[in-house]
Length: 251
Ligand SMILES: [Zn+2]
Image (cartoon, rainbow, N blue to C red; front, side, top):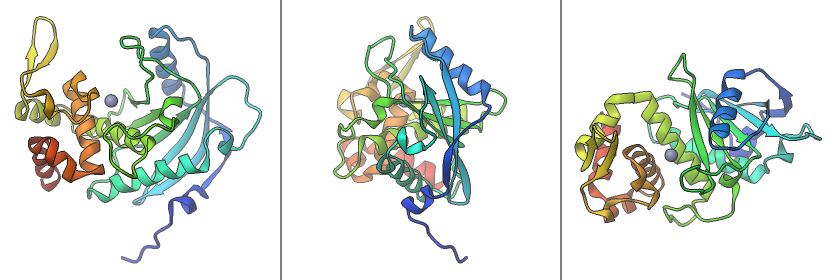
């Protein structure tokens, strides 16, 4: 197969000016999520086009709050940041023969604080209710802060880490109950029916980041991200988790 590989920068050339588009379901989902966290926003949904990643067209959209003065998407996202997103998606594509399980990247200009911890949220993966295979990764303003990737891999930015983490949730959605079941069976996560929560009965040192302790789902997404970004490091921190993904990708 002869295929011309475009650089991330060239792929961004496939994007155009922001145009208003309809996606009420997604807008409402995000507005509701923000509202339930006590944050009121009215969002405008716009599309900048699509990017080809491994022969799959991924929508590139914006959900903006406030007055818009410019139609140029780069007013709301620098080309460097956009390139990092493309780079992260291409790395994900390269890791597996499956088509990408993400359909859209949505950039927002708002800050969203986790109602429980007060911490700024980097991203969230929203799934189309009628079709669980339709995943949109929403990136909040904090995803574009200049801190290092929390998995601490030299040369990997916080934004690449965030996109890869969110893709872990897309994978989780795509393989659904099976993947999650395998994960909690292989690792010492224990479900408590009464409180409907999970607790961890293993060594705390096994977690790739502090955030991974939150739940089996976040543990999976954080571990997936480190697997893609630095497999050797994951093998050092948690051989079990590294073996889990080795087996998953081999099957
Ligand atoms: Zn997450």
